[in-house]
Amino acid sequence: VCEALALATVGNIGSVELASSLADIVIHKAFDERRGTPVYVRKRACLTLLSFFKRNKGIYSHEKWVQGFKDLLGNTNYGLVMSACSLISGTIQIMGTQGFESLVTPLIKILSSINAHATDYFYYQTACPWLQIKVLKIL
Image (cartoon, rainbow, N blue to C red; front, top):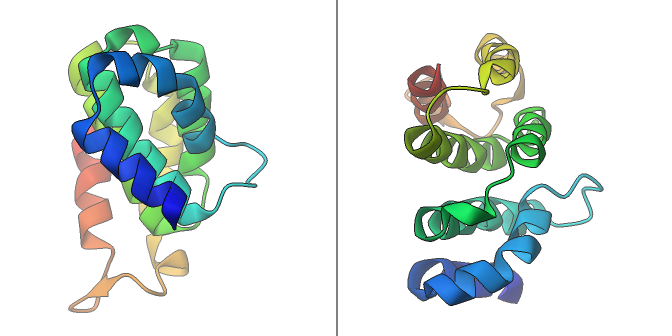
């Protein structure tokens, strides 16, 4: 819990210098392939990374980030996927759509299987409407 709170604080009030120096750690937390980082920390790390990226575009590495996006989109925790979609959307707004074509298939897969994994995310009998909107905006 303390780790997620620290990420939220740094993401909200951190300076450009702090964003530069902590970017590698936050990138590792967000794109942790080992899945050793708890989901709530990964969700917060995605949002903190978006904040850092808006402050310092130099932390962006296309190959590393696109692979991280693919890993995040393959997750079945839709809270994490929503945070990932926020990061993807913000990245595309800043960097443009060039080079993100490989994310189309995982995004469509999310839309097609949303009812199967949306056990906790229903609003008026609609599965994950906020996630559906985010995915459609990215597409």
